[in-house]
Image (cartoon, rainbow, N blue to C red; front, top):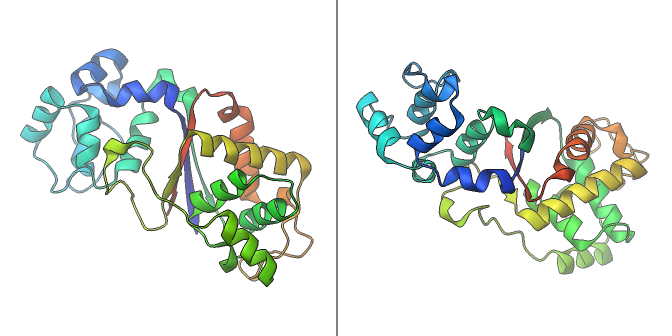
Length: 256
């Protein structure tokens, strides 16, 4: 199972989505944005903005329609028409050289059992807040009882702490069909801060990851610690170096 994480600073990107494509191309002046070439039908080779728009819309627009979009439409409008809105946002963020330090994307082949176990144990042991617990569960679309062993008292405590996990979009204008899949979700600014703070504290303290229900999914054990897992290392390395410095951090995760 592969999980893709996209962190970005809304302080840098909120204004980007409001731009028209004409303004975008003029402002950032990249070869990618001005490249007149198209990707092969039904494919996206990463070579041009035109290829990205063609691949992101269904049915795939003709070159004439794409040129009209670039002439008359905004980025936000185009994202609203996309079948993969978060993916398209991610591609755009990573294609702006001057803002590369304000967006971080990485993928990890892993299970999330250990991360859920660490968050649940930290909350029950009063080392982490309910906000941290909720952020981990919400971003990964999980019921903790599916991943960790809980007695009746613990199950009740978690259910009262996190009665439901909402799936509201980062931006309301993304609309009701903003998700790219059933197991995709995003965190808003305050939630992302809670998530990042949890990851950093758990990494620095090498917190335990106990109660994991299915020991066969990865080489889990009752002695597993936070630093034992590649997922936690990737999250800690990226959040400690960059995300923690941002003004308005956000994150979305896709299950690939």
